[in-house]
Amino acid sequence: MMERPIAIVTGGAGFIGSHMVDLLLEHGFTVRVVDNFKGGHVANLVQHENNGSLSVEDRDIRSLKATDAVFEGASLIFHFAGIGDIVPSIEQPAEYMDVNVQGTIRVLEGARQAGVRKLVYAASSSCYGLSEVPTRENHPLAPQYPYALSKYQGEQAVLHWHQVYGLPVNSIRIFNAYGTRVRTTGAYGAVFGVFLKQKLAGKPFTVVGDGTQTRDFLYVTDVAHAFLAAAKTGLSGEVYNLGAGNPQAVNRLVELLDGPVTYVPKRPGEPNCTWADITKIQGDLGWEPVVSFETGVALMLADIERWRDAPLWDPASIARATETWFAYLGEGKC
Image (cartoon, one colour):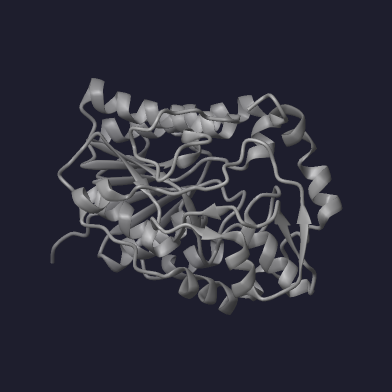
């Protein structure tokens, strides 16, 4: 019997990482998850652990050593682990740089020691700042807040390890991923988590600005397939934009979710439109988005009970949560 190839998923209990685990197991991989479980989907992993093809290490990526057994024999690494959200990054910039940059370097060194066939890094489209659209990979970069900077510097490290050490890598700049298992707790920020809890509670959706702003939403299973394609390709040292290439207005989301609306102030440093030019990833990897926005929202509504214990946000609590955002990124500072 042919031995199953080994893939490592850092942040494998998280939103995108847990879907990556599902896909890899479907494709016959033995999967090793590294996650500190500060958020995520433990139940999903426990279900898989029972079939013997998944193992889990409960640890911070900053504690990884290049010689750790978790890297031994691995052929692919998918690096999703890190910390997100805008406001906490403004308040704790050193922590973000430590986890998202130094943690990434720990993973790179493990990959180099193991001689992996490919490492795929989960980068962020936030590196572009207030960009022209549709946005190509060669667009000038202008991170607006520490989270964006930390993810971009993590990407720089990934590409540097390719340049200096010949480590096979690709980096994917994710635009607006959404889908089942999207984060339900923590800091204010993720629109789907906010809106689904509000719908469960019978409260108005807190729409930022007038709701005409658009986002390039991409369903999470399409994200996972793109990462697998980036791992399997013979190309290396590449950067890819990842979105649906079909921006949707927040007002369209509200229409699909069906509920009353209240409005909160538009925030500085946020683009009116995010729109990935996905020509390169389509051409190089043959990847295409499959799940329509309407289908993706319906899938989330079918799973809405998952947000029962999520925080309930209203205009007053949002205002308190975003005070730092306005203070540091306000008028004249972006």
